[in-house]
Length: 267
Image (cartoon, one colour):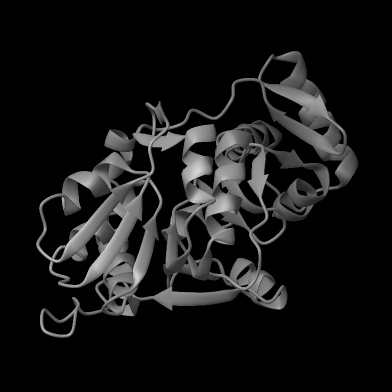
């Protein structure tokens, strides 16, 4: 049974704030009303100053706020731990590893502290703090301009250093991922860097807790060179998982609490 109009409009507004975009067709199917009803809802929300009309839908007038690294660090703790344990178990002795910035990749860096023969390059200050001084880990920082929100480096100097290196495995984070659009970031500088990092690796992984799968919080997107692997939690939306697999993207579903720490002797 369709929701009352007032509640439906409130949910449309909340959905637009969460995903960054409200599509007429998507909203029509979601709320089981006609597209013309949705258009009237969007027109009213536009008059109220809540949404801005776009072709085929609407978007929030206020941009989706980007959370800082500190804010994200304590979110989805168990989910991030599970992804990090799985990722650490893929790494082999003697490999050259590239770590992105971000909270989940920072958790991976923590799990890599016991490795005894590894070259690690990173743009993230959190990973530098985790791995600095660890015996057996040869640590390199790709410097550049510091991005305060993510506490990671970016810009021409970062890309210049990156262009002179290659890696066995690249571990990336992201603000969201969508089967339709790809990897979502807060700005286009970040998406370009993601693509460049992915181009330098033999095996590329995107570590992303399931709450970010299918979301569209921003309007900057990266299309990574295939093949690459999305590593997310097992409760990720099934339609998104299938949509990515249909495009040839490998999706690794990890149960919360799954995975084992790497062996001190083997790694």
